[in-house]
Amino acid sequence: MTRSLRSLLALAALAAPVTPARAQRLDSLVLRFAAMTAVTGYEDAMADAVRALVPVLRADRAGNLVWTRGRGSPIRTAICPLDEVGWVVGGITAGGYLTLRRVGATPMGPFFDQFLEGQRVTVFGRRGPVPGAVAVRSTHLQRGRASGTDEPFSLDNAYVDVGASSPAGVAALGIELLAPLARTKVPHRYGVGLVAAPFAVQRGACAALAAAVQTVAAGPGGFTSTGEAAGTAVAVFARRRHFGNDGAAFALMELQRAQPEDAESFSVVLLGGAAPPDSLGAGAAPLTRDSVAVPGRVRAASAWSLPARYARSPVETIALRDVETLYQRLVAFLGVAVPR
Image (cartoon, rainbow, N blue to C red; front, top):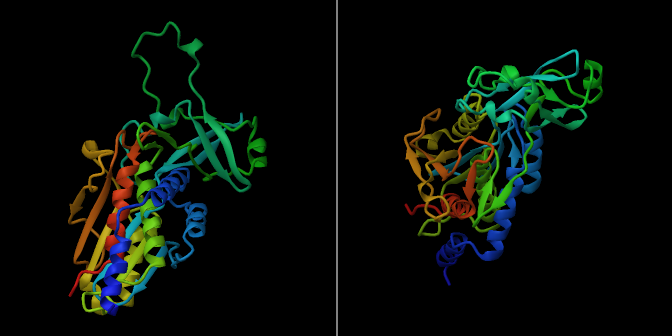
């Protein structure tokens, strides 16, 4: 058997349908990612967890996690964001309650903050995570008021109870101003292969990319039909997606600086956006939107999206079959080169 035939057979095996055992591992990975929290600008803990799951990743100077294989043209790059829009502690009242400020520039819709009312949250202090709850207005004090006279819940109404009764009690818990805070994550699997969790689309996409990197890194490199090495495959788990994509921008500029002669041959896939729910759970290919703005001289950029229900809500829902489809597309994108 010739070298080129062996290479093509190996690459075909990489792109084969997901086996039941592999699907089970991917499902487990989706649930693990969906339970992770990384408020924009505070991605260290999640980055450490992802690197432990995928040891071939390395950290660049901006803190992104990067995997690279091969060299030369074409350069195929898949990018998934680690971070999510969340909150930080903006103040501490005399009674030991926390007030909040939003972190992240991505528009999240009018209900994003309203979903916090009465919910469990986690504050990430210096001594580790601290559980808390967002207070609700007293039903007793609301009685007798005319319907519709009260304004909807907003961030100005958010007071977080962490069990302290004074600023000193808050400090004893290791909580300071600007400590990140997010809704407590408890991913819920229900129905026929559905998973609900805050930011489930981002987390599902990153789980698919992590699984694809593990698969491609363990197999042979990409080859052209003549058996020659075929370009560069790159995966990036980027920081600060919700601060203007500056983590992804840094990673792309570093790649272009390292291989300036191949900068025109970049193909970039951005993951993590939610698409309309038409094919949720149907196993259809995730929707693709071309001409996405990315920095530098990039030939082509696409956004690969997981269909979702209830997008940008605490029960954002994805289908595991769609994650499997995205995983297969990423294996083909990173592991199989286009013949010259």
